[in-house]
Length: 441
Ligand code: PMP
Image (cartoon, rainbow, N blue to C red; front, top):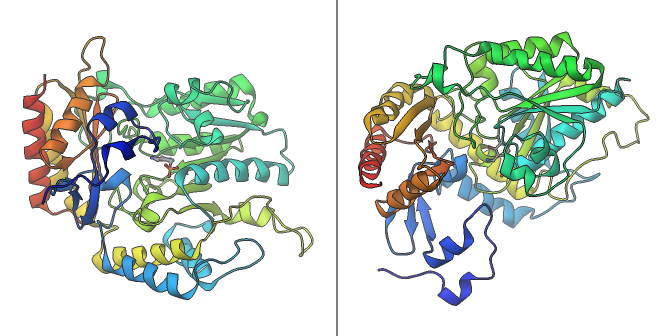
């Protein structure tokens, strides 16, 4: 039965995030249910989820283990103070997570989102440098076209111009290295691009400019997601690690998107065989069901804080909802689901089929690049002159009409389905998208 979930008069109060509010409110798109690979719309349609919500519902929707875990937890212990008190699931979860990451990343700090994970990691990096007597290292380095959430730390190290210039003053002492996107040499590459390892050397330029003794940490997304799926060139991340090691600089991987199976390995650190000092996560940690983030840190970092008097708080940082019982339960249910269904390596099994499907879009109208890695894909469209983002947004609206959810950023279509996706869903996704691209101007 077709029905609107919200009366037109009730649309006004909610100021929607990262949304063209006026456009939306003139033609609202509402989800009222979800199961497996699909959303259910308020007008009764099943929409194929091509984006795992916002890169987060890695286990798909309404998964029984997760639903049951939350229900049970709500009845047992709804909330416990996060400071100076604990509850068993927080420790169980941290231990399970620590065991999933390569050594020495064996301590976990809980947050409620990717943005909070990023700001937490940046703060830990700064505090660590002070703790080891390197207090001159106050500078943070991000990368152009990086997205690290919307906290002041995250937008400062982030490289999205619109996110920064809207708000005026940012954190001081931040610089950016160049991004790795090189359409001229790498367009239509399957997987990791051949060219561009040397882009990592831009860090040397920044180090020489500021002096290494002033730099605390470098933060990058292993695969930049929100700015359009920029896959790092072969060897790039290893080179970044080497440069950081040479200069005593911490390396932070923002794995909010790449964490929890997106590349066919549990984390991008496994995929690229590069181990950073800190890893930020969120999204797939609870399959998006309850907000939660986690920062993984190397044992040497944790230990550097543990040498004061025993009854002293070691790190002045934390959130009322750090390790919230419902979030911990959701995460444990999610990890069970991932394990039982082999989801953290499923992207590797599907990667070849996915890659062929993404690259089959190459011949569609206005396509200037196609990119992929694991179960991520991007189709870059030629912008309409003078009207950037218009073409991709038209594709988004048309795909929604045709019962497929995609995500767009600028003139790039980004795809990141739940890891439970079947080949038949992949066929539907790209057949629909082909029709969409042929239908829009
Ligand atoms: N870092 C990265 C790499 C992200 O992709 C995102 C969200 N897309 C964030 C941080 C911010 O996460 P959140 O929206 O949960 O704050």
